[in-house]
Image 1 (cartoon, rainbow, N blue to C red):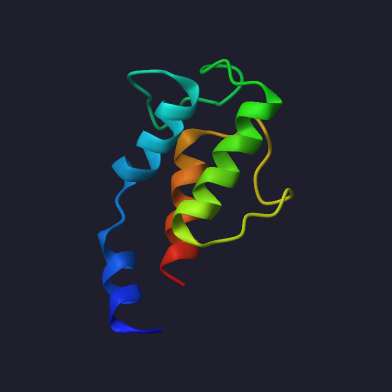
Image 2 (cartoon, rainbow, N blue to C red):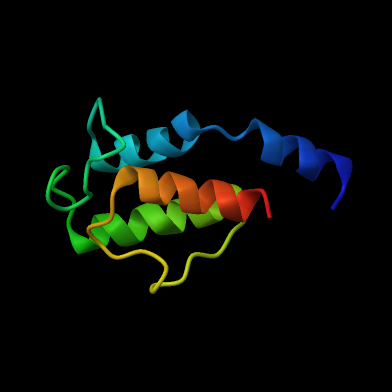
Length: 86
């Protein structure tokens, strides 16, 4: 891993990840406890697009069995940060 990659990984915050979710779902505010489908009214395509966007943005891979479609925002944030910082 080069110096640029290390710096990039340290700069990613929870808010960066939440902003991707908010943008995809066109909502202005989300809470850690919000569930994608039940609380934020995402459909299955929204969930797939959120995960694909996170993968593309951060250069990670998220398998289908790592998160269910109705997971909490905090579960997504935790998973992405863990993958980035591995």
